[in-house]
Image (cartoon, rainbow, N blue to C red; front, side, top):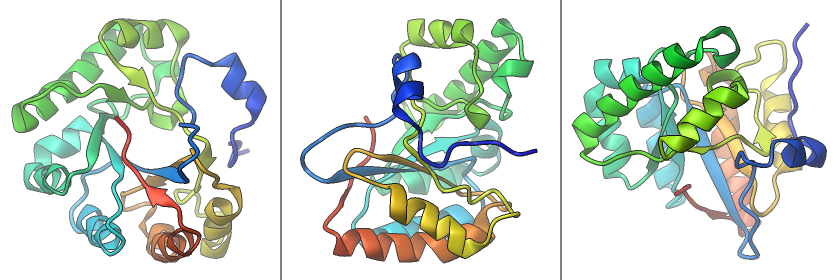
Length: 212
């Protein structure tokens, strides 16, 4: 049985208040994020769609994918988007030791620094699964733990592409952090949803901002 929140509720945000769930503001800013890249063709397609609206976003990259596709990673940073650490091997924190998790995250960081020459301070745990002890060590290492306010569920093939679009259209508000995935698995839903969502949000005068 699959279980996840499309819209993160206030109780969860308060319970895990040391994580970043949204960025409240009065300027109608929203924060698009893309997990699991860089992925050949798909990440580049996302960049082109964002450029149509001069939209900035944040890409939470897997270190192994950065290592395999450095040129695509370079395109993300060249376009002025933010990047974040998504571990080197997409680790599930609940199934990993603290040392393994931290070392895997540092390995991803090393790939980023090698190509970008600066330290990344944003971290998103794969699957949203991370132990408090792991988060504490990442905080000590200088990371902000970025979660989300709205989940597109573009990875879920049991929902329709129309439902994926509905997930983001109906739940986004000023300050929302929205999760998409620039991955092969998510692309059928992403290809349908992202252009339509960008058009809708643009018409509603939302401002597309990157996380920092």
